[in-house]
Length: 225
Image (cartoon, rainbow, N blue to C red; front, top):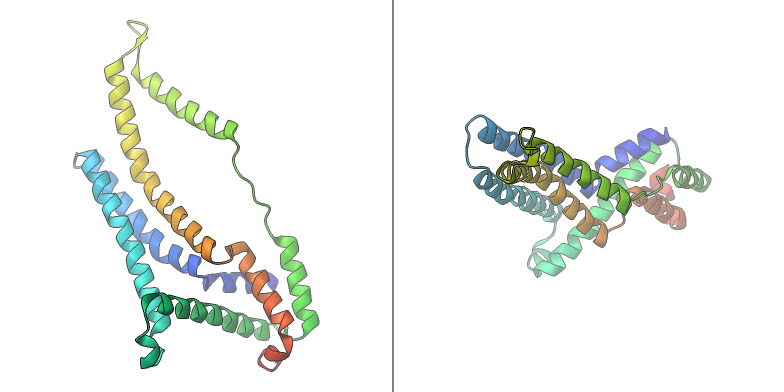
């Protein structure tokens, strides 16, 4: 029951909506870039430049569409407000939509009392994942392994030394391909971080909204029944 509530709830989060829109398109762009590189033999740095130019367009299109959808029900007086005011209204709309969806989901699972809300809060508090960050040693080892692979490709067994020309060529090719593959993930991480800067983190959203309903139970109890 709680797992289903969490699953349905997270589908409506802004960050999840962004991921659902962004990643299929990003994967398609990367696939086309790799095909252009390996099959058509196009210039790698040109491909990377086009990829970098295309990915931010997906981000812009997503937010323009999402904001327009959030503001479409505003009356004319509110639509004439400045951009900052409209963004504030959009955030209010997104918060209200999230609460409304959560109320519907709780009602569907017969969680309609204050004790039920407390039980749900305690459950999700216990299930909250512990954040783990890679330490410096892990990053160093990862870089060392990657460089070792390139060095092995450039090593000349006849002379017993590293062929600098091969090393530069292998390093440049590996870097270009790595950038093509990693850039979508880096951009997605930047956007997710920006969302988290202005909003609650994804893992905390559900607990925050349940706590809001718990504190303001008298206001929402009729809608929960």
